[in-house]
Length: 66
Image 1 (cartoon, helix red, strand yellow):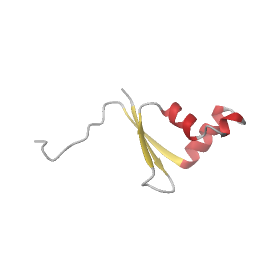
Image 2: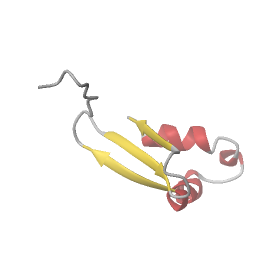
Image 3: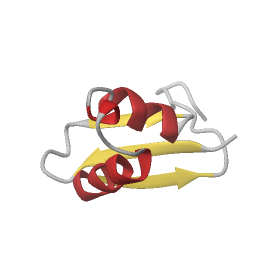
Image 4: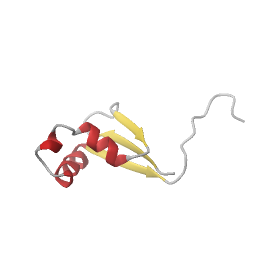
């Protein structure tokens, strides 16, 4: 399953780890979608965020890992 790491260009502490990038964009720009097409809003999203994709699961490591 794909995972997306989305990091704000302005603030690296503003980030998201999601399975569905389209859903994240729709939620973040919900109000703007009333007046603009999704492709326009998607462009704004990519102007403000860097997106990285992983083709496998991202697993949290703990200190008990060998």
